[in-house]
Image (cartoon, rainbow, N blue to C red):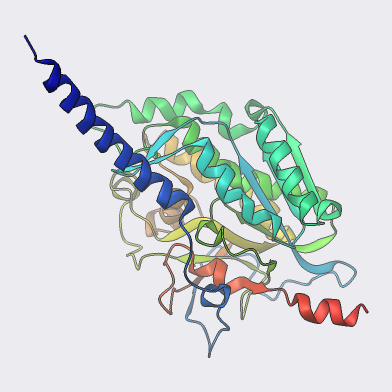
Length: 350
């Protein structure tokens, strides 16, 4: 029979262990940032390293004409889906609480913002954040049924791929069809927003809710601008790893390989509309090949030599290469971000 003191000791050790785990998780989600805002939004020195990945099928290889009547600003598009808690990688768990904390940065993002969600609480939270930031007039938040969009209409096909014997498990990428669909939806959201163009802008960006998670405690208004040497005939994003285009798509999907990050991309209005068609074509093709993963693997496979042969992508990539010590996954956002000068604004308005 287990002694009472032993039970107390076990309970005490369990409390320490789980309490410690919660503390570490909570610290990661809400940690105080010791750096000033300027540490992240550094001025660009010199010419950034850029790689233009074109294809033989490139249609928009000339400078894309921009309508002078449209604003040269960027409409930022994002989405949050109620997927409950899920494992990310080997040791990290993301919850609704995580995303609600990260979303606080949208209070300070002065760009026009369009939000899609199936969560009433998140809709209300985003509306309140934008209202508090005096940004209601450049905000749209939609409560939608995700089943109305094609990425969530192919869950069964995606699940069939992930349930194949021996198919590698990379949580949540190759485990949750809903998570995969959420990644596909980025391109639908940008395309739909570009078609409607409620804020009459020439450019559009997808921005993950948690992209600026490292600056949740830097309460200063900022704005996303076009990256240096931006080519409006291509889609601009962050190259994460230097990868060979000779890799086979099956290897890319099954080994969870990444060429570019999907957390932020920027494009002209027309490219945003056209790229969604191209992306959907690629998703359907790779599902037929019995492979799937997130948008990052889809894009890498699209522009591999195999993908160029069978998908024939007609839009090029403009890849910005991380420099300067910022997290390679988020470099592009900080390069495009600029702090707003409140002092100058207030002074000029007096």
